[in-house]
Length: 98
Image 1 (cartoon, rainbow, N blue to C red):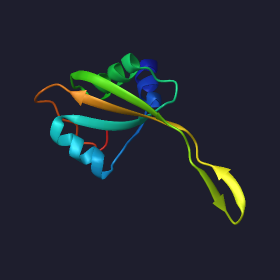
Image 2: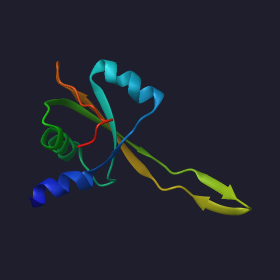
Image 3: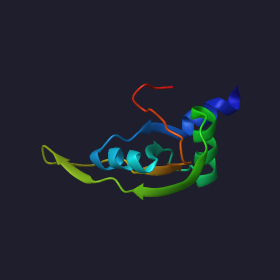
Image 4: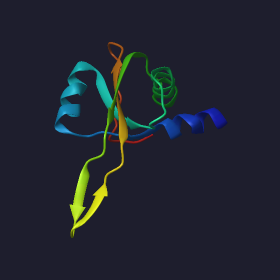
């Protein structure tokens, strides 16, 4: 049971944007993941949680933007995105939840 919780700690939430929904046509699903997550860990987590076969995982680190609110400078947090390519015939419906 402990390992299952670890997988949920790695996969924070799905990313739903115009670009990520276009990726669904190419068997790609995009997730926001923990900053310290590695590609093999992300692959294992997606395969375990959703019960699908993963072909590839591509990751990118997004630096947080510097923003101003009422003259006070603040910074959005950094985050890591993972674009997961699924095997042919596999799908994940991220709108229903786990």
